[in-house]
Length: 456
Image (tube, rainbow, N blue to C red; front, side, top):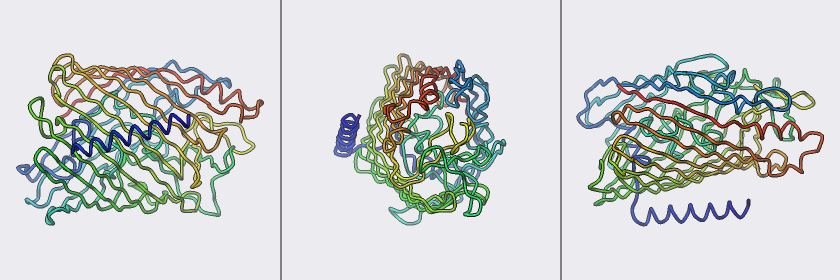
């Protein structure tokens, strides 16, 4: 395992350095999201209304653990009450435009049923984006408001570019898409978890996530040199829930640097589906307040993407990204335990110590066999808490899918996910306590997802 991790780091560094050396940045997978999401097109009106809806059906067998309960990994989020469900995952309405040639704005509300709108067990539609960008200073555009923090590729990309049924990789879902919790203080702390150094948080105190958005300000811009484009973004913000004051919070700094080589002659050369090769690297650091104390949390990563010929026969794309984390690490529920109490399915397990680690990577790609039919394949790995032998878990997932593109912004997706969970240090768990974690790991269901994306 250690040798494999060193090999992955070496390969990812080599790929990213090669991409930067050849001048890569921006693709249909790694487009210039600073530009596409930060400013409106030059000829955009003062007010432009748009949006999209994403219906989703998921099916899993609902395999139970040894205690007769269905592990959370086999339940459909955000309700986590069934192993098969139809849902309106996203329903997005957006207003954006140009106030003048130097000022763009964007506001977007989210009305779908997902982990962003599922707050403390209640459906809560809310504002997802609200920012303005000021382009007065050459080389330093200023974006302020609720914005995407510069970071991992899956966190940056726009919804029209998602594949695999809008299922994030496990490493992105668990390591980057950070949930929040009701604030506590020293007179009302969360209880210690079943593992030293961890805490179990009641499900009613889990307040969902921010969909990678945070309030703050960002300096960003992009530069062209022939077929090359370079882009950067540096953000300072607040690591806290977008709505409500009774939540964890603390400072956040984030940055991303990318370089792209624009490919000509086969597919679009601009916009979210641009043909190019891109190398990128990113860094985030936050100090979330948990259980009345400020904690350290660092995430960073790098990757490379290639895209050419969107909606052209034999058009293709490929992507690799490696990321790691230290400090606060979440171990989303399978069956979490309070100290000297039976395991629960609804609570969250948190490891706030600075010594905690996690890392993962994914490799994915797609091919247009016609100008409308696309076949996709992805493999992702997430190694969680290797520093705590009894709690280390390795998640591996194969995703096999197909998309039929009716238009650039209307398509249907069918995907199949083959999932596994491994316990690499089973001998570190006392024999009398192995039955439940073994059965949970062995119960991980495969999954079918049928999704549509309809924009207006």
